[in-house]
Length: 244
Image (cartoon, rainbow, N blue to C red; front, side):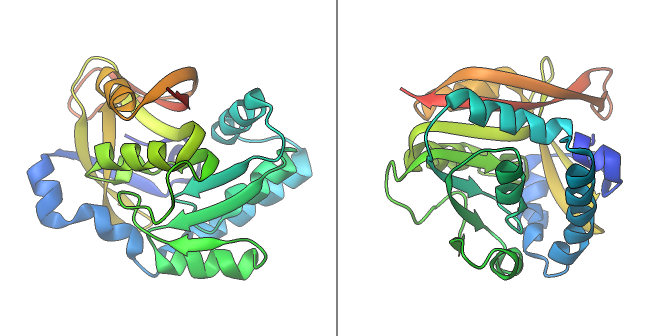
């Protein structure tokens, strides 16, 4: 299964269904710390940004986040992006006219080094999405950016996203299925073996609820190929949640 971004740029493929036990044994959720990943992703980001500035049009996965941020209509909210990579979504949102006070964090120190290089005036931190170093309700909006699909303890990552949010949480670029159970896959991403979790949507919504979140908007921006070994299609969605 490929997310829409990967489908367009060919950076991900070879998905194989595995068990959670195998994913834990292979430590596939640590692969984003590979020091070569940031430069490989940067080449894609540069092309995307150039196309956006030239055409004044955002890809569907970006437009979904932009639409939900604008739906909230907050005046210069404090925003945390969890799994920020090189911090380029800050630039995307600014180009779209979203005014905010931005903080980024990522599991990879190499990605954060790159983010600080490109956006030296912004705060960036290296941290684990399952143990964020921020205070309760520190940010108006917490964005989990294409993040939980790579985290084995995704229930804890969802809880942490909710904890640091004062009002809203966004889970962007999330691969889901509707009938099959949550499925763990091993794939090659940027030439590195890693995990991609495809969530059963009902189960995912229950984890949102358990974390004290109520879904107020869902944007489906892509239909992917069938789940490996199944006839069921996958979908790419972005979820906007409110604290309850």
